[in-house]
Length: 139
Ligand code: ACO
Image (cartoon, rainbow, N blue to C red; front, side, top):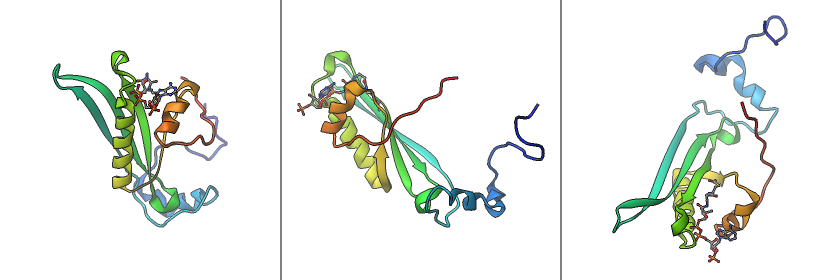
């Protein structure tokens, strides 16, 4: 049984929803441009230890095209990891710098990430500042 009021349907977004007031709804949130297409894309980078031909550090930036902010791009940094025995060599910093560069080159107006309290000093050293609060829901 539907949890919606009678006469409502929940479904995936369709391309012709733009003519159905989709962008109008988003105007309650913030400024919306008149662009239409939403895209998702990602870039994963690694650092390898050449002598051993082993990957030792990794990171990903997911580039999200927003409906708001005139279809602006936001970079989401995800899954940063440096091998335990390789930490403290600035590899993490280099990964982040590279991902920030990719984000800027792709035209992102901001790059964001979630992290633990423990990692706040690391990300501050990488040029990030604390904003907002992370919320999570686990299935
Ligand atoms: N507390 C305080 N300072 C720190 C910390 C910390 N926990 N970690 C790094 N720093 C400082 C370093 O001292 C260095 O400072 P300096 O420039 O003054 O010398 C600077 O941050 C850069 O450090 P790096 O050497 O580049 O850090 P490292 O290569 O060890 O990578 C990382 C840091 C990625 C957090 C690594 O420790 C790691 O992989 N940890 C486990 C996995 C993890 O927590 N990943 C991040 C998850 S969040 C996310 O993915 C978005």
